Image (cartoon, rainbow, N blue to C red; front, top):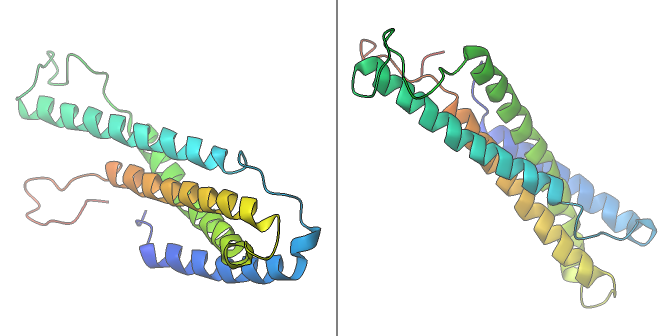
Length: 171
């Protein structure tokens, strides 16, 4: 599995921002009002992935230290304090991280396109002021989801073994 390319995420977000801007420009008066709570699922998912990345990174580091003989070990050489991390769990988290990175880029593009239209229109349209705040919150939550997903993906990478001699992650 190859890591997510940042340029793919940027291209996806930029393309959807242009498309969303064109659609909002054409049908802004017909769209339902934006509410403050609409971007909160993105924020909750970003928080869950950031916490998951932090937990996974610390568990894998403790497991590596136990294998190297530096941490508290049980008879089989694994950590006596932590359950070993299942490889399938790490693989599933890596897939979740990649999917979330793309989802965050999609929503960042959509919220960015909305913000590109309602931001300048805030002075001349009554609803645009509130919609600008919601779009900015949505864009921030989407960016947070992309960042948390990339952090989780990085935590799922297998570090090179000392015998490799290379600085690239093993696949």
